[in-house]
Amino acid sequence: MRIELKATFALLALSACPSTSVYRTAEPVEPGRWQLAGAVGLGGLNDSEQETRIPTASLEFGARYGVADDLDVGAKLYTIGAEASATWRFYRGDTWSFAAVPSLSGARLNRSVVTVDAVHLFANGGVVASRPVSARWTLGLGGFAGWGLYWPETGGSAQGGWLGGFAHGDFRFAGKWHLTPELGLYRVFAGEVPVRGGAINAGVAFRRDL
Image (cartoon, rainbow, N blue to C red; front, side):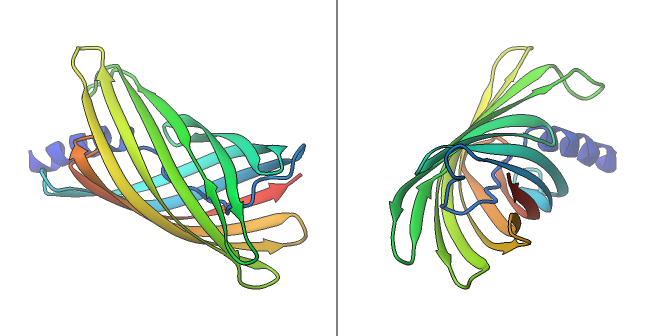
């Protein structure tokens, strides 16, 4: 019975996971240009109330478009939902650059044996700081805050707020390709969405400038 309960909880928790990956530096896509990306990641959720640790996996496909010198917009599909985001570079220095990276995402969970029809909504606001460390490598560091809503058809709702951070390296190769490994984590400090606890994720993205 305990194994069945853990499996049920794992399905519910995974269906409610926000996408908190960034996989980009503070440098927006050039105006009028596109960038395509794909990413895979592995991680884990830790629910302190259920005393449960759950392995997770993620898959992402997305595109970004440069709309101004300091701004791009993008959209992606990830494991269970879709996201719209932007990169706004508000400071460009000789060494470090800084950009805001807000996003809105959502997912729909259909009825099954252990779930009900439900909508998941997530808002995430972050800042990334990046610095070139060589001709090919750029270091990126940042933090974010997020909010999530679980809204089932049966009535009622649940919310949660989290704080987190990330670090990545962006390696440019073959002219227009980028390889971006990233490590991120967050902790839910209020509420219970997606869990009463936290999560960690390690992944890698391949991006191509068009």
